[in-house]
Image (cartoon, rainbow, N blue to C red; front, side, top):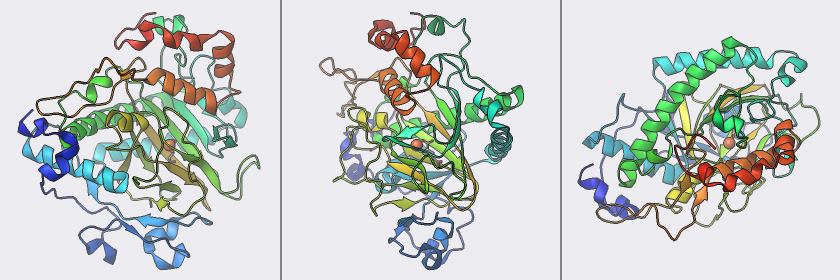
Length: 424
Ligand SMILES: O=C(O)CCC(=O)C(=O)O
Ligand SMILES: [Fe+2]
């Protein structure tokens, strides 16, 4: 790492001014507003379908401004070259300003997304009984029916296939009963192959983005990526029904309620239908999802930003652990999904710390950081994510078994809080 990494990182923005060229998003480049040098959001649009061409896919019944985001291409490999530093700075700036970034898919990623979307359609098109059979009593992987997931006490209409680390029953962590550790109940080998390839590539993207974030924050190499060794990465394959075809269990028009996600990064792809809303970073809005659930936060107010679908991009928002590590310099991005006139498909990949990681806030300072401050207890990611699963799926077979077998108490054990330990 060069000189820049020794910058006192909270002051980085004023210390480093580097220009970075971003491409405009495919599909919106011809919009006249795109020509402005810092297009971000347009003001709240009371009648979205008439005022702003980017808002024409916004689900009915929502009031929000519309994001108009730059798209960043990622280089094939990250070094600590000047251009990588500049890109890292630009990404950190964009997250702090917009709460979300767009990165360009290359041709392989486009193909992986097309294959994953086709596999998702095929899976969700199966009879309910076949989908419902895809559950596991030890892992939270598998099928979540529309109306099953709970966010802030209200059911979501999303229909989901969750992929967690796919561990066989012979894995020592599974044998020892670690919460959430178990096999992924795949419906068939075809979906397994497609999703594993998709997830593998997303994992590479996640590591690249964390490395760039380290450069942009001016923290030493490994300050973020050191936590993702054997990361508890997971993926949610999502289908949202059309707003007029729900099962009447939830809140009208709602796909997923307002929430922040749990780890470091959420890298997502959405089809052309539209439904995602986010909140921009706001110093007056205080939340810390690892201390108290931020689900439901300001769900019905007007300060939401609609993220229109853009062909050929992944969006990247930040999770709770990025907020915790950076002491709110980067904040987790609150988001929600509205139901649209047509069904919508999306896939969200979660780039996470190791289940065993105990995270400590990064301390900026010339010459490096004292990352493992002995006096700070830190946040155990495994406990944070287990709390989420238990809260969101209180009636799932996995939660019932976890409670019945008192597996939650294992989370206090040293071997579940020591990275790289794989046996209990
Ligand atoms: O559907 C989307 O675009 C986002 C989904 C989401 O927020 C989630 O799965 O946590
Ligand atoms: Fe989310």
